[in-house]
Image (cartoon, rainbow, N blue to C red):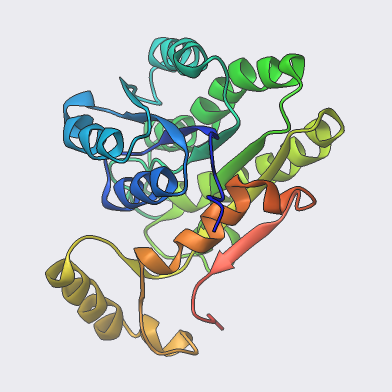
Length: 255
């Protein structure tokens, strides 16, 4: 069976988290070379060794998306690492999304959440996408939205929800403006997905059950990272060449 991401050069943000590491391993297993970024490149050392052992290439870059100089450096290194980028997956998250209610959150918190989730990624893409267009790359941009911002607001997560909602608007705008140049943009939206090992997953599921959120899920369970990978591979691969401006939701049926 052919590898679905064979020789794709993919820039993955948020690679230091549980979900990010699983995405990186899955993409490498499907044939991709990866530029990996997180706030501390030391967190990527073992992951890069794993990817290299698979016979793929991996480059790690430290970047904080609230720091414009970091973003500019990342864009330069990412493009030069493999002589181009075929797909960008923006999977990083702010350190703390739960920052309070609308009337309580401060201007700096609002600004920080939007910088990390919206403006930082846009700055990165404003470096990368023109180069993709100039090189004639039929590329893919994948954002990671949230039910908190797009469907079901959660009290206490106002700044995060606002930023994620704006990210979805940005995704559609990118899809509209860049498709004619061969670059498509789509969003991946996970529901209640447990990351980490089995013990972490059990703790997460207990929290979802206790909060009552499980009752809004038709399957009455949380998901696992492995159940998200097929959707992400699809969006990063040529299989999604006619999919643009869409939000692919993987949530077990949330109503």
